[in-house]
Image (tube, rainbow over all chains, first blue to last red; front, top):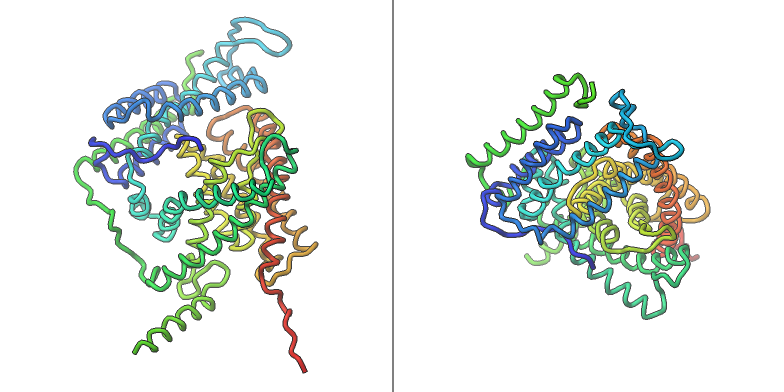
Length: 275
Length: 210
């Protein structure tokens, strides 16, 4: 079982902010990064994100495994982009400065390198803030925060149930899979791919049945406690918003507005240094 | 006194089964029923565990087979399209967050798959214990449609809008995902649904004796 990112308790301003603030901030930030392709905005967001990360008192060693995984993914993506479309940057920026000609349709152009750099920055701009959101928000606060930003509390509750039952489902899976392995059902390399998929069904079926059982039990318990009777509900983990929360939300909104404004300033999503 | 409490509990539980049909709370129109909420939560937890921790190696190096879509298909058939869309969306968001950064275009695509697979529920009444050739065909047609819509249409289009990635790369990637996910969903989903249907009491299986 591989390591996993989760909530880390620390004493920092960012930890003290409410989940609602961080959810708003994260959403604004994601939207800002999705909209723009302006290098300056993206680099600025990345640097600002790193500053926030520093403030949160989280440690590099706590995120390094996730970053290595993400960098591998991004590297594969970028290689894929180059293999399939070596002239994507030329198409976007409208000029062509060749650095070296390689073979066939492949050559290295400044525009392509710049495009790939921007593509990378689009992820890099979000990663620090996404990590902060995951690692500084208490999962018990998720449902309350989602409800606060206007999502139905029923959906918020579904998310809370998911977070609560992940360890249980994981334990079920491990037990069932070990029992089936003892009976000779394997998912390893020695089986053919199709057999592996078929064998996985032998593990998944008991897992589905136990999950359906669980759904029955939980929904009956909720029903008996009168869940969903009222239009609103209260949350034990909900905390009042204070000054730092309003500052946080405003900051997120400002970044989003800058990202949108730059679209009009540049006359498009791209910042083009070539013209 | 005690008896009346039991009676109330019984009546409430009975009322439950009558009131919540098709995932929507009949007392409270347009609201998710309690069962759907819990199904979404547990379904998302399953989706997360299978997608995050269970790595079945595929023939292509460094890639794994996504068995979580088989389970998502099963949940969509049992609990309907609304549960399907939210299970896919929440489950996939949790997987991405646990790696550090959400990939919204693919998250939305997972939701779309759950939605389309769930549309087959109209043709399949799994609770009546009937899951024969016709229903298997319906399930597989919808799940393949769902995977094509998700990975060949929704995910690439969103990736073009958000990241302006090259079209050829996205469609090659999408086509690979659609084919491999369809195959694993066909095998895993069909086996589980057939087995699940056998655990249900068949409609009309009781005859009145003369």
